[in-house]
Image (cartoon, rainbow, N blue to C red):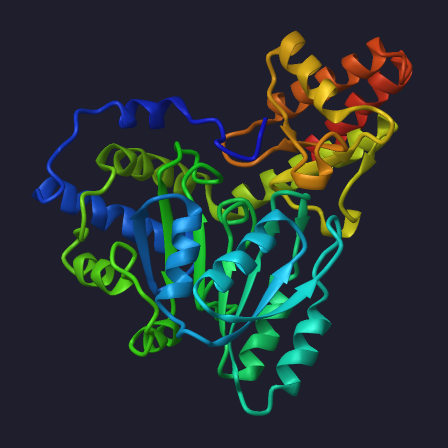
Length: 378
């Protein structure tokens, strides 16, 4: 029950175990054609969606180095570990970074983006880089509003980390006119780590024609050229593409609305059960990510709590990062997670708290009743 790698369905594991085929074969080209169409469906876009053998960070770095120039001025939103990472990546490539910060556990303020973008009369800001679902804190940022302010600027690109939001909540790429959207295979896609995906708008490709930042393996022009013939510029992770094809077919059969509703009810069940257990959410309740719930432990050591749950119930929870280590634990509930999994992890948390004398049996029972109501849609 961590935010990645997430559980993998049996059908996807079976697809993964197939014997590899040649990546220049007709059979593999048919596979690429199938996955590309379904990736466009999942992203709700008519734009190019490219597949890279690499983690979600590879896709984000590719988005930055293919659309920007050395010395460009960019805005980076930072309200968690991954927003912090994009500041580091941008600086590594010689970009001038304007940071918009928010306290970890709180969302980025869209009005701060609006103010800076409106004040940029010379159109010096070339991109806004941010994380949609901040995995380190369980916060989801208001991407829809922020992207509307980016569009009003008319020059800046949106470069968005949707690693734990794609496939868990609504990210209508074309409707919101997002330019660069990155995601990774081991999250909502329900397959093992190793693939990343990047959707590119027409505006992003126009910027790519002028980009002078160094790139070779992550040169997206090569991927786009190969995709025209349902191929790849370099040897891809063939078996992960087998798995991707199966997982996308499963997602398409389930339907986008059903996927989003499932993740939302799991978020509500988990967050409300946690409150019934006398624990506090780390994130603002209005901005809870549908993918992960972060829980404050206060006087209790979160690492010891995680260790107890792992040893007693064989359930792995995620810990806090950096200054939050030992202060929070995180429950992932994205991808191939069902109602039973939610009830099981809540039961494990409740049982551990009960053993430690931190709650009563009545509170433990009430938490499960609360969770069940949300899982049933009440």
